[in-house]
Length: 352
Image (tube, rainbow, N blue to C red):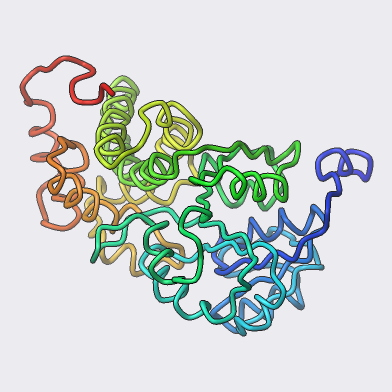
């Protein structure tokens, strides 16, 4: 990218101290984007080798090999150092570790910091969405001002500077606007929303549905079948989101249908890849144990199924993904159960 084009893509703005907690692919990508906007970016990483790579080689070879990072990013395993005087804190650990990580950094988070949650999932033990997990782990933070960031955004593309649109949601419009102002650019457009529940449910459920789409493709069922699965999956997502208090229109946006399209069709989707492997007969637990990156849909399938049962929501695709991944149901049996369901009205169960 030449200097003139770069200035258009990454316009300078009021400089902030941005602390990114979690140096996975997505956390590293967000750190790279913030650094290109000339923010003072610190990145917390658990692995010493990742800290060394980022500080010395300006690359995260463990999870984003081959993508150059801005040399201004400073990585550390010391949360106090990373969070010192932070204006914005972006939480990006895997969902299974969000509570532990947030509790660990809690004493170091400045009271005035704006907090953004970029982790997508549902906590298995409590069945809480990520915002509620963080509200418990950071008791001094105002729950109304906690924001969630989601949307169709493969980490490698964001880290490489390719155009991306996302949404940041909070009950407090001022909090969402603050994150938007800090991160928005022509190549990373940030929209705001007042529906964090809907945004979170979309971000969590799309990973489960991507596993289903991967199995559909892996079995060679065709593009008609995949389109039907994605569309009916969107209905499941909306039903569960509305039952939890979300706005049905949110699922027509970036964190709903946008992220769903990307994750169910994109070659970079870890969850779709997991579905492809399951269709090949690979044991999902063994496959995931061999990967450095996390496929969030594996754990989310169980939590989403349990949450749907708790609220009496019909989620047949999610149900079958759960049974295949966690209960050993044969994939062809799961497919048969879906295809022989009783006929229904198309928009059944999702009207506001």
